[in-house]
Length: 338
Image (cartoon, rainbow, N blue to C red; front, side):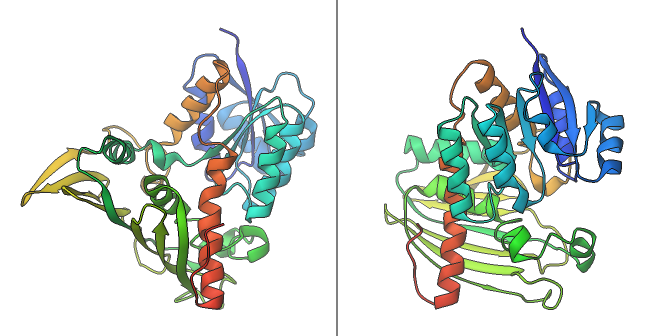
């Protein structure tokens, strides 16, 4: 088995999950890490291996690098992804693909003509609960899906934004709670529901006004082409990071995700269907358990020369929902998702 050389661009809070996932695989090696702050790159390289680099462009022509993990602030994703795709590298980018839909489409266009593939990190699709929900929808075992809701009540402090000045700004984060924290839940809702007909919603800044330019709270009603209705609420204004709650109502039962467990409510009885895998969770608990699974799957697709399923087309969908919410909030009327 030939070894796939990896590079991680951006040595912030999410990068260790990527480094540990690479280290856990046979036939994969972390070759280089890059960060514009030399001290960050050097410390990360000491801890996880690889050569410390301060300018990512130095890696574009490196023959020993096959796969690039982009873990930088949001506004840097698009240009970096495009540059590496044009260099023929396999690119796995953290969410969001970009700060807006047009930039994300430019990445997808670069991927379409690249020798390399593009993967987008929506790791919650790999959670046990998410997989079971999707299987239930696709199998029709509970009849048709009628409606669903997703609720995210998390907390982000003033210090969170002060310590990372790129956050909380339209130009560099691309938005607030929608594009950073709740994008995973919105991605799940659109993955479960299918094609979207319209989005109506609103955004507000409830507790971080004066700290951030962007929203800390949002709600939306998503109408799907199949007549399913999805309701969403997300906020960074809570005082704790509560587990994400999901509810999906079918013709013959209801699935409920609570505290990362999935339950079936049917005929007046509640049954536990699945619970999180035991063992240590890397990173923050509310990030879910899917990062390593997604990264392993991406590497498997690359090694087997198969198209990775969470590609640019899939990655753009959540951004389109978010853009629809922003437009609707600005005009106070329903807007098409695209």
